[in-house]
Length: 148
Image (tube, rainbow, N blue to C red; front, side, top):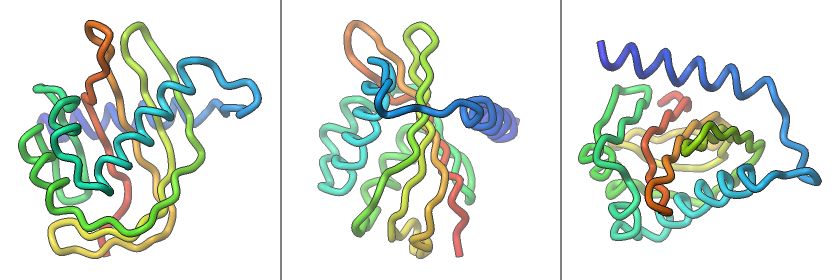
């Protein structure tokens, strides 16, 4: 049930957010902040900076990937096992509602998850961040890239 609810929330959020387009020349502070958070996450994953990731991944974190849902500990294990090649992040769309920033974007990357090789074709991702006591916590992630 949690899996279905998480999938529905992610799908709805992705559809709503994809209706608006971010003009890079008119980027708001929230758009800049959302993109910055995602770019830092990818830098940390590429460099294997697990200390940083464990510092900002929320205790109630959940993710969804084609092979199922994960909680915080399971996502950390997945990230530890990632083998990221070069990547390109693009098409950022950011919204903010109070302390929550939702970021959708596309990524082109060669990666392996649980020994499954993913194609480098651009695929959509969604992450949400919660600002708490001046710090950002990563609370949700959806990987909409199918496994081969």
